[in-house]
Image (cartoon, rainbow, N blue to C red; front, side):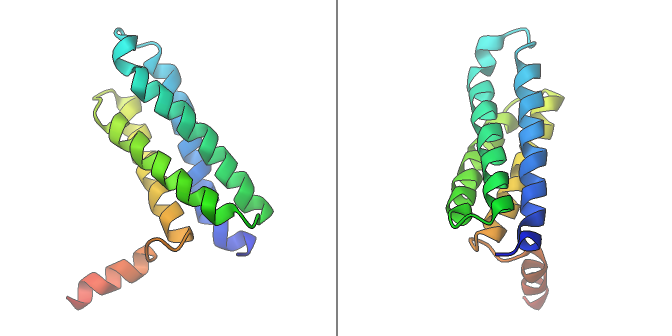
Length: 124
């Protein structure tokens, strides 16, 4: 794939990584940090993997799609965990993770682009 074909996914991965970094730091300041342990751990994993996926795509690596698939899986888990918490930073992180999942799956060919999905729903 050409660089421009990865651009939306790279942007989503970068934004997700930033949201996860912010969320993990904010979770460490929560009153009951032990309750946030899984959220923090997933935030760290997700941020690191998102940055790695973005760099693989930027280089046009032959492994970019495989890394993107793994990124979507980790982001999905992170979104689920963050979504369980009411803190604004967790909710924003979950939103960024879900957007990243959507872009990674689209880029990896695991889901049709949003415009195709919208057209399909109109036909029904």
